[in-house]
Length: 260
Image (cartoon, rainbow, N blue to C red; front, side, top):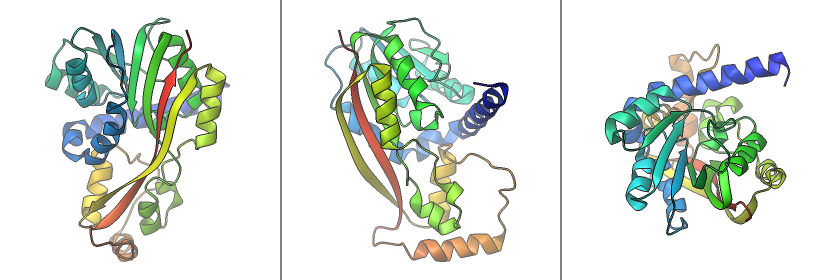
């Protein structure tokens, strides 16, 4: 990477960390979609594990559940946002190791974990290939990674309502993810693409759910007036179903393994 690329990447990471730190105090109350999607991983986890990493642990909800599921294992929660880790420590204590760090440059030695769990985190990483290479490095031979990430067209209804394509999360597509996995040396045991749809009573509730979990990264000149909001409400109402206003998450669920 050249100096400009490194600076741009560092700025993106700082914005992501700031957004999620700011959201941390109310994250758990608004993370209904994230909890539901995380359950897609739970049934496929191995019966035993000894060193477990929750990569992108947020406030520690899944880290705590992993600690209960594997009571004799050493559990580590890693996140890019200091505010998330502070909430995790306050809620779940110091029996779990909490580590500040980046999924694309994991602060751990080689072969440190036999299980990595990651729910809706790696879509925030610009270099998916680097993330997969790091997973390969820190996994023990025979180790597993269970991951959910988001694909393009996630939050498509919000982009339509605001008439702003930048409202869509800039996620890697499935081909890019598969390429990164293949280049890393990890093997795909199973992958499933699904669309998970959630419903909200009004636009205010939709935006609270997005902002409340840190999923809206501030952009320069992103000022909205009352006219903009009223127009967005009218457009979103065109999409209303009997359950409410829909918000779609295009999910990729992965079970990866490092060969023996």
